[in-house]
Length: 317
Image (cartoon, rainbow, N blue to C red; front, top):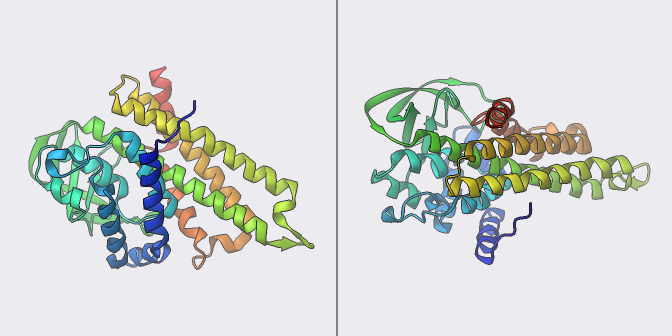
């Protein structure tokens, strides 16, 4: 299956790339890991100016009420640049759970960061200690929540918290919110995989061993070609899932799970190839590649791990 972005979507992706390329995103990720969210919030403000934070918000709250395909376009770029914060939760999930709540306007404007726990699939909320709004959703009901004990995450820029419900609950389409969260995470995985591939290719063109750049060796070429193939096989599934979600197809759960499993596998292949191409330097914390390696590991298990999504595909067949 072949998907081609229209000119507006391509321009949107290019504008996000331009904004993030001129920002020190790796520095912001490291600061976020240390508890300093200032640099990261400046990046979120730039994304808000571009309309990223308004994509899923209804038009009556100054949102764009965009198609899920546009969400994938944006979040693939955010994954490509490793943007810190509760990306899937704040951009894609919270607007669904809030429904007609006026706080959607603050989400659209980028003035409010939100995070979500959705047990049992999403038992803990990422960045609940710094989010302005913490939600917990289960069995078709949503309530605000308070963060509790922190839990270790493989990615130190994605702190995980147990949360406790507080206040009155309201009805929401929790299952649809879950699908948006899974799709948004899947798009980020594709973007991260592409970033790892690009970084590995660039390094292979520069690093020399035994008088030759390592990219000239067949073993390296084949390894990186396998990554390219894995990404190109996963990306159409992601866009197909976005179309299914936008059309409210009865196969939406199956399509999103197939995309999440494929993107998780592609990102893992990309991470392994990038680390093997770079050698031990790739996983040192001073080297930016390590940020994407950790992010991929965290996102693979976020909003349903590959095994859970494969089970959903099997159940749908």
